[in-house]
Image (cartoon, rainbow, N blue to C red; front, side):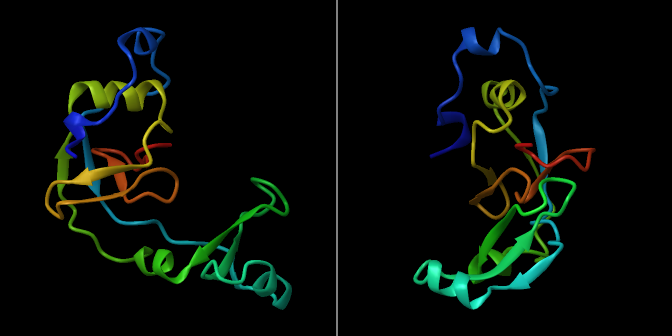
Length: 136
């Protein structure tokens, strides 16, 4: 499915205003580096057996003292992996949806790689001309 064919917010919802600037272009930069990564404890291995988790990232006091995220090996393999660096342009309606609700989509398309990759804090794209991750 092409981005231009994807579900977008209604015109009425977008008319309520944007929480981010409307941006049409983004660059594929790859997933960001991780901090505070550790091996799983024996207890965590038992609790999450079968889910494929291999590491835990502790977010730290700046976000929440005990909060974090579990990572699978396939997710870790994407981190610090060079990406194509190409700029992709999206449809106006999708750009407006991102501007109204940055968390509306979970992924977007890279024109050179011809694949979808995640957006958000751990996503692989930044808005062109910024360091801001698409979907944050």
